[in-house]
Length: 187
Image (cartoon, rainbow, N blue to C red):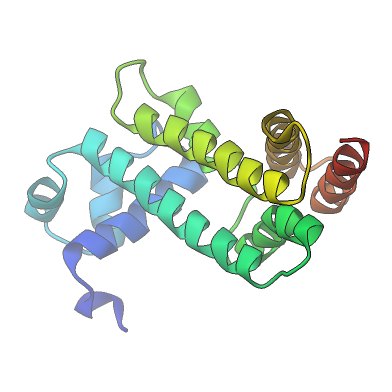
């Protein structure tokens, strides 16, 4: 669908996703988002009320898209270990379509937002979901302390995203997958 035929809200979210991730939230003004989206200034305020609400919506939208992708990767697997490791398959698929050169968008946002920003709730919800979803799969695999193992794998996942941002590791996804396998084997 051509950009000009998409609703203004969707165009603003897409522009925010690109710019907030590429340039940072604090480094991107609403004028740049409006210009990239090709909408009138009033469209931003009509749809989001201001930058804070746009940031929260951007983070929620990114989280929703991530969850959908991850769930499709989990659903494609039948073996318990592969269902757990599907988080890394999802990262590979995400990075083939979207840059991960700045690591986790939610962590990046958390470092830029003031303590009372509405987007921080979305960031925390995103991270809680990662652990909870991993814990369900780890428990289904018969691991005794599923919560601890899920938190360990989530930490490896976050470290992998940081390694992607820094760019010093040749294959952070492969390494994270290998470490997660070791965690599962020792659990």
